[in-house]
Length: 185
Image: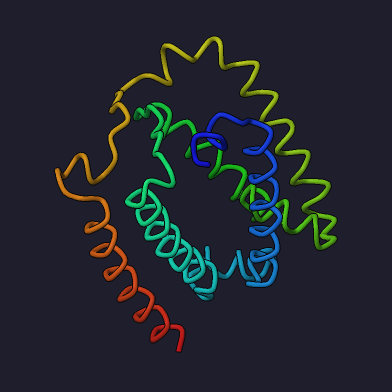
């Protein structure tokens, strides 16, 4: 079945759409589409967002490596570089600082009826995507490829088993969650 889904783009799109709806639903139910929660995270007064993100990272990481170990999924890490990371971080950071939403929370906020996300956020996403698409041919081989680090995964870099490393990282993140819970008290 994995091979069938891996080569069937229609199923991949449908599964992605369903996961996206689920993700948006959980963002909204977790309070992460609330502007005040997002700003509270940026001001270090409300740790709801980071706690939800760390919880999702733990579940996602363990889930991916469990499924990989069983042969249910294949990892396809993408090529990366310092140029891509810096440019992407600047674009993401500028949008986040200006509007107070990230791309995922913008879509979730639109779904719950937030007009600021609909007007400013959607406009920002569309304008940013159009500008990047326009500039991409010019910066593709120069700026974006500066400082290439290929496509290794953390377990490959460390030379360890991904399943075992995911448990070590999960335990560390769980301790961080406990500390954040204590701080938010």
